[in-house]
Image (cartoon, rainbow, N blue to C red; front, side, top):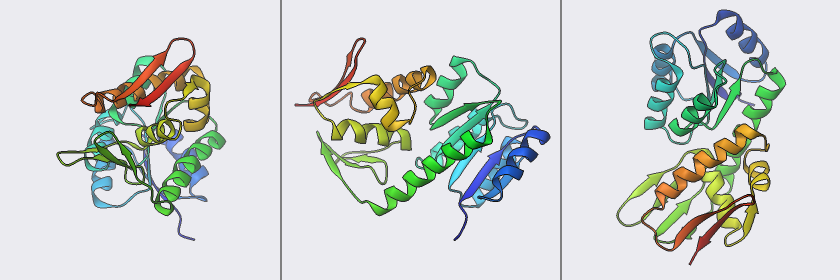
Length: 226
C-alpha cells in the first residue's frame, strides 16, 4: 500500500531527526529546515498532510500556512510548536490550521492526530453527500458552500463542524459533545478552537437571515435554519 505523504517543516535538527525517524516507517515524510523550502516543496509536489513548526528562518510557519491555504483549502495542517500561548494557538487556527500541538508531545499523540485527519480525508472521498443550507449547496467532501453567485471554500475543520451542526440541526448541543465529536477531545484549548471556528462559520453565513448559530451560555450551541 502506498504511504501517505507528509510535508514536515522544522528548523531544530534534533527534533526534526527524532520525528522523521519515528514517522518514516509509517509515512513518506519529507523534512525541510526553513519555511521557504517547505513552501517550494508544497508547490512542486502533492502531499496528504502538513506538519509545520512556527519559528523558522526564511518564512515562519504562520506565513507558510497562509500560502498553503490560499492554494489548497482542504489539506490538513497541524502546527507543531514550542509556542504555548493561547494567542499563538488562536492565531494558528484563524489562519486555517486544523490542529496545534505544543512541544514536548508524544510521538503516539502525533501519529494519532495524523491518522485521524488521513482517515477523514479517505472517508470524504468514499462518501459523496451534499446538503442544502439556506441559499447554499454544502459539499462536505470538497469543503465548499456554493450558490448561484458565489463559492466559499472551507477548511477541513470548518467543514466537519458544519456537517455536525447540520446533522443535529435545531438541537441544543453541549460544548463537550461537539468537541468530542469533531476534535476527539474536550480540553480547554480545544474549546478555544471551537469558538474560533464557530466565529468563522458565523461570518460565512452573515448574509443568511434564516441561519443562526446560537450561543447558549454555559451549555453549548444550537444551529438553526428557519
